[in-house]
Image (tube, rainbow, N blue to C red):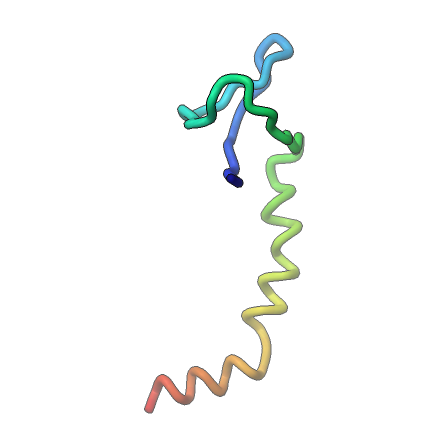
Length: 65
């Protein structure tokens, strides 16, 4: 099972912001990101490479019929 959960740290304890359906005692891997813009900045170049390429123009032309 893989799920992303937003959480906050309160008195040294990681507390999910929403309920999670994970049984007690389950070992989890936690990635701590302290910069709120990290994910948008990290993914920006990847998204640009996917969306801004000449191959997509071919699909747009096919959709136009």
